[in-house]
Image: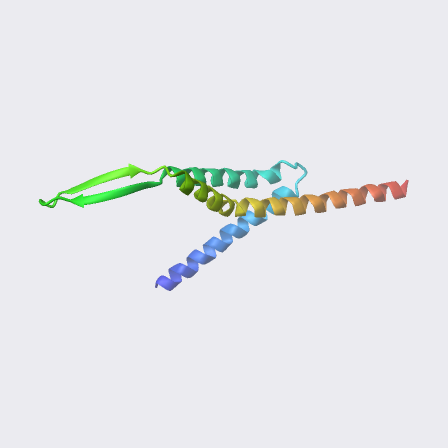
Length: 128
């Protein structure tokens, strides 16, 4: 039964990603050039939120048990600059992969639209 859940999950995930890509292509081919930048901007903001949340939740938790069996818990916040830098250097590019893919789709669609527009202008000039 677990294999069916996995297969359904993969199918839903692929459909979701395909829907985002199709939506990005549709928005990029539109007349308004700003519409194609909506999804990349959203994913960029999501990546910033992800990095900030990864950095803000870095802490150490120490538990000790007394002779009576009582658990003493101590949470210390460790703000190590090195680990923050490594987190940013590794996490930021990884979280921005979708942003880069969507910007690449935007650039390809806009370039194709620009070439077709220039070709139409040349055809109009040839008719005159």
